[in-house]
Image 1 (cartoon, rainbow, N blue to C red):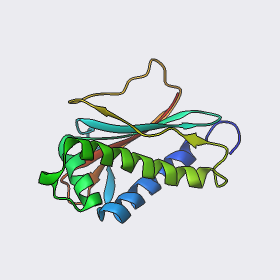
Image 2: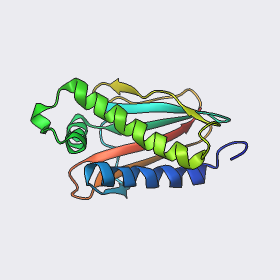
Image 3: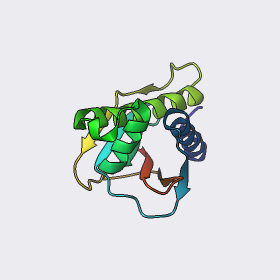
Image 4: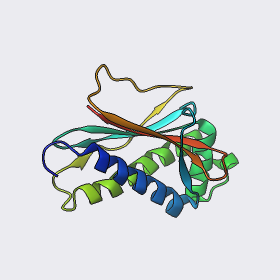
Length: 155
């Protein structure tokens, strides 16, 4: 891609990669929904660095994080430490972003990803002083038990 990313194309790529990744790694189907975003207690984020930097964020409640990481690791939710849950959400963010980057940039040289970071705190939000464009989609697991917010933000 030359110049700025095509936001519509990015939305499609990341949405497809996110839903495919949760299906493959967790065995659950995520469905887009119009419901309000669940409270974010844990956010995994990283930045796609290139011609137009983009923040990539996956935000979930503590309960959803434990459920998702349990499905990823096979460890019972009751046996997961807070550190392992945080690391699991960081890894989910890293997997989704890395798979999308491979599609966006087949030669992997033009754009790079920062290492994933975690933000924790009850009902936190991520705010920028200015935002040129962005995409935010809420998802629910097919069983309706848990939600997830996925966000792309031009910075």
